[in-house]
Length: 109
Image 1: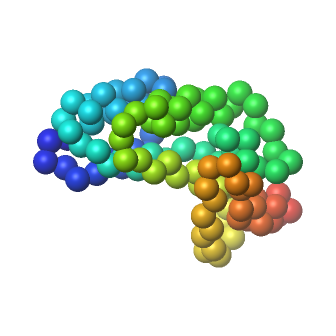
Image 2: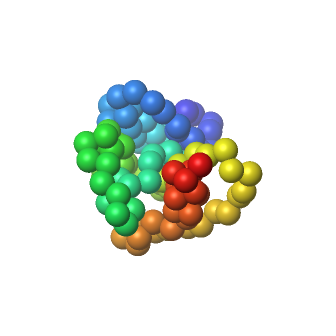
């Protein structure tokens, strides 16, 4: 990580341990900027959805990052579909999730 400006992390697997390893390595090398890909729903911000424990790895990794001293952004993308549209919206932590129209349309297909 020495000499880098940012870490972009988009993982699958043991997310909590991966986040701990990334945070430790960044703190050890003085790298401050992290972009972490997670999942919508980790803050129970999706109205009418309850994904239960399936999101726990994402929640735990986000908690590790939030407890760090890093300058981080946690991206929480919505569902992927085959609909040929692009319409990005920003939802901050604590706000209801926006952009659910793709999810709703995907369920109708």
